[in-house]
Length: 286
Image (cartoon, rainbow, N blue to C red; front, side, top):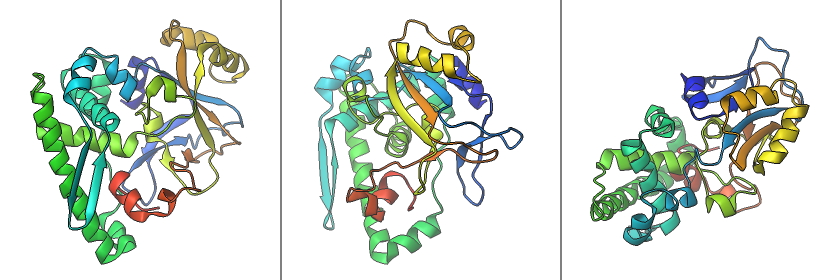
């Protein structure tokens, strides 16, 4: 089913990759097939047309864009000494995700509906945060819920009725699966949800995959050097008129049975050391 959805989104995927459950965890990831000979360093793994994503600028360019820009604002709430800020860009992205999931009649809508929300083990999160940290996490969840209600009310003002349950799923999808893609800011306007890339899990280890935005011309050069993804395969399944793609490539040799992984957050930032940030956004603690 995973590959079926990706193919409908005109996403080409390396034939040796598999979606499967991560051992000892309650989440899925992307693995190099255990029956393969591995994947060489620098190999092209995937290419995603930029328009089959969820991001602020994609939302603004959509049929809902003008109304969303006028109806949605930034939000800030505080309780028990805990403050949650939600930027206008994040709010627009979340509402757009909900609208695309509910009212879109396209492969991206189907993919969003298919996504199963997965969280880290709740007991482990509580243990790592400690009692005080876990209480703050619960407060953040309550504050997020109040923002979601406000988003539903503001969306209703422009005639877009979104059930709270759908907005909640959109929020959880965007908070846990949207990441900053290098070289993409002018096109996406911020963090984005990119099908395929959203299943690459975080690891503190040295990444074995790099994700970035590039031009169609650069992608064709990569296809000429690829051992598994040919230009013919690309032209058979993908839109040849798309100017930009999100690309994934290996940064080293990947062994058979090995999971793809990279680092969600720059290790030099304060957020990288903040377990409450990880728990509230990505729903796990590294």
